[in-house]
Length: 385
Image 1 (tube, rainbow, N blue to C red):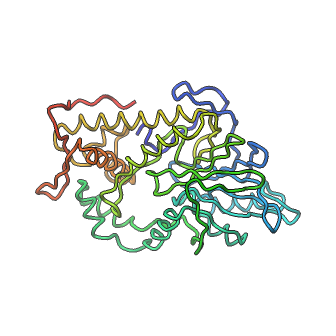
Image 2 (cartoon, rainbow, N blue to C red):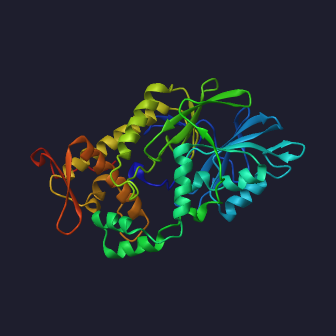
Image 3 (spheres, one colour):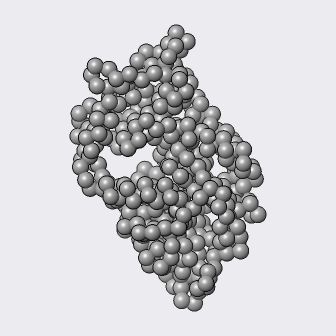
């Protein structure tokens, strides 16, 4: 579904200019699972498999040292799956790429950008194995613990009502009930304590200083790391080269405006970070062209909002506006329905917050959205690029 879709293919990372996006990929092929590639002195690129349509995640190991000696500070961890565990056993083997001392591998700390399972899934296993602390922002850690606590319980009736108001049929609601509470499926039990990351904080990792930069919208308090001296940005999911991270409204905060947070974060990153940073993203390849990518993200969402305004010349349910935002059809029985609903709600809530659109609860118990001045809207939307 265009920029908002899980990645289905990655271009050959041969360093050529990406003519569509204005980006350059200078780092070559990604390492296979269980291996590492050095991108700068003491900066290792790791890649692990994911059991999703988005089939990989990039991790970053930074040479570090503490009172116990040399080791690695790890950024993000992968999911808790047998394939990931096998890759980790290769990475930390005595002769593996993370061997830091004569005794073998050692982690000094585990840094997690945000609480999604592909990023935090193995944090509990790694921190316990290496007796090292977990570093996260407070909101991400607490949200992770909340979702773990919610796992394997029945779907709350408030959540079912939420999706019914979005226009879900009973068959989809039954599927939601059956799938609810699976957050912990891909998580090793998380650590019971953490060390807090906060915006502007400066971390000394090895001989280099990294500054914490917070982004919002994709998750509550997403941490990025910037090394200005070496022109590096570990961007997590906040800036990806080929896709836009999912920005959704969820039943836990039905009146949220995450797209407003996301667009504000894009503007802040554009204004405060230089364009010469090598971006180390969680998915895809490291790239140059940060400002071009941020501009593309903002423009893409702006065009989606324009198409949505035109679609809402007449009252529409949430499930009626997918065609204005996504290039692929949304199967009402697939897991894409939840992502599409959350993303559509994020755009609708943004327009409601701006005063461009009003929401009403119809007699059938389903929300309807319509532009405030329908005469100014055209029912024909431009095609999605």
